[in-house]
Length: 407
Image (cartoon, rainbow, N blue to C red; front, side):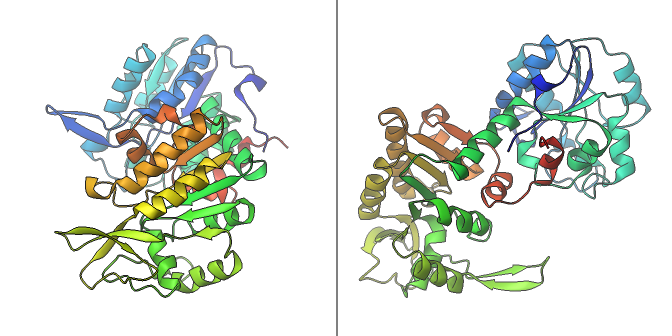
């Protein structure tokens, strides 16, 4: 996929509508709201620094959370503007609206090198229905869209597809990098190529899994996703969480993931690797069982992959040239069930540092566990998008990318 990039257009002294990926949670620290994580802001610094060198006037647009068309004080973009100014070492003005006469006046008075952070666009209900008149208002006074909102690229909103209908658009460096890494992952991975899938639910990963199964050499299953496959193998999992039936409200149909897992295991029986042992708990006691010969007792739940599986998965990862991981191997929030994910982290670090392999992690929980027990710099690439990354890896077209693709 070839994109229209920053270097392909004349940006000198242009007024830029910068679509940022700043959907970032906040937390209260000493009575002040601060960003819980500034990784996405750091990812956009190269694009913003480039625009500043071109003497652009930069208007930043993003949404935060799900305020559903009403003003929610906690979801204002003030903390985002403050942290961006600190990281960029450059003033960032903030205005409490994203459209209207006050915004237009503020933009008209901007000078080269000025940066203005607009208010959370989701304070307007028109945003999520991609209202065209609202999208036009967002574009008033701007010359060009620079789109870096890869985590939102799968959304059909006024601030994604809407603004691209009314202004010429190019990709920012962050979005460009995400697309290049993920494109190479599905088109030309160095082999052996190993995929790890974990987390709580299979429903939000199934399309990506289907596509990755075609190209991966091994797919290792952990987390509660593994429970679905273990049940499909006939294992008794006691009171473990199993997303066995998913109701797709849009398509108005039910999907039985146990049936799906059986089909996958039959079709890819030598490629899909399930846990051989699991760590279980009744809420008080924690122990390990061999899932092939023991059952999880009633009242007990499987909460991590066991030592035997950790060793098996580590050996497979260390033989790999490319490793992609989405979803923790267990309930990582509890330190009693972190060893499985830690084993994966350690193996991936070895692939990246000692074996010169490509290691990619994706998804909020995966990033959280990687940061908690190490550094994100230990990996070749950290994809900061959840749903957009999985949809891209599923081979789906992301609506906001369509205007950015070179014909």
